[in-house]
Image 1 (tube, rainbow, N blue to C red):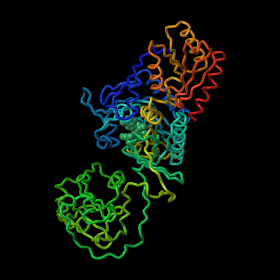
Image 2: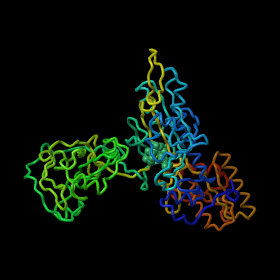
Image 3: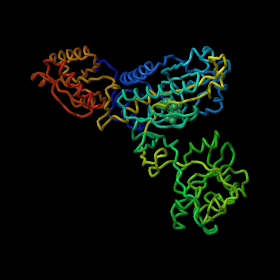
Length: 578
Ligand code: ATP
Ligand code: MG
């Protein structure tokens, strides 16, 4: 391929609205262009990487026994009503009507469609297990599309769905997909980690996310330094090491804290530290009052709360609600006597507080707090105890008790064991060996193919541009001809191109009439793993220069016996990625 005949519009500067490095570099390298918020066009170079990414996914899905299909992106609302998600899914689901006034949506995921497909066809246990997948454009009307391909509204996903006759089979299907995912991300050359995850709006029993490790990741993962345990912090259980019984504690008494609303203010005013405080957070969950108690220095894990309350809509209480429920302004809510003000309030407390003693909490009175609070003694009725806080780097591994670390990650894949959530709601049944009707057990398995491209760049770049891992690079080799106008150079460049292509390599020949500096900069920006430089002086000496984009190492390759010399050198480039 000749650059002069390709559409590769590189840019010196990234447009101002590009925040993360992958977005900047994808634009600068001429791989994508924005159409509108969260919606992008793939240009020739970008499309090559997207296709290579998809090809690896496809090969490994096929190898694992999944079969490729292609489902429609427009889906009828009736299927979503059947599963109950037409109401539940919220605004991410883009809904519209056709000319007959029938409701539709653009598919954000395909559990309904695939279940509808198979419930009509699969009748017998003999037809199971079955795993079908597609690589298809999804639409989610994300509240904040951002970071380019990382959180688009339209994006490419591989989604696979398994159907089994029993739990053991479903576990086996899950295990196969898990193993396939490990192969996929390893082949791509990415540093990744599977972690325990929350199931989100897809639902189901348990799940793992595959995280590409990168600073720009929106997710935080916690991992154990000693055992295999790793989890999205959204889900990470906190080991509750509470003292056996509350220590001696003087009777609770009201202290005046005029104008001290926040934890920091109260700590400074009463000269104490946040771990001696009880933080009382008030929420309206589907309209009902809920008070959540946490130690003052802890952060609420909203996912844990959402799972506990099983409510669709959880929002902070308004100042008016706070006043009505506690009898005080914002900042003075506390558990003791709260039910006297608001009998219907649901009181949930983090396990860590279970045997706490001599704490400070809001007094449900303006400008006042209660000192010497002991929950076990001072509450009329026990609160609901639950693990509600975010894990911290100081916590111990919930599995082995070892020390843990935190890292940032980008979720590129997600495997779910769904169980019978959809098959039951949509009546996907079959006849088992005894002729009994049974519900199919499902799993679903997604990979954000376009997000993988962005994650790869987040993980593999330097100050000069992208450093593509060989498996995902648009081309393996950038062949830079410094003198495209000179006949001898041009002929040599064509010859080397042909030799490389005969050896199964894809090559982009930079034959543009540009200054060498421009070409070197662009070659680094585009980041193919191998660079070859043809110049007059080298040709006179019978060599071309070779540069490993990742390490920056340079070497000379002889024109005599070029193919062999190149392949040996290329092996060293591949090794630098191993
Ligand atoms: P997130 O928590 O990032 O919103 P999700 O849990 O909603 O992701 P899934 O429903 O599991 O995602 O979708 C499968 C995969 O699709 C994800 O692992 C991710 O790689 C990708 N994906 C999800 N949302 C987007 C998006 N808005 N843009 C690009 N890729 C996405
Ligand atoms: Mg999402």
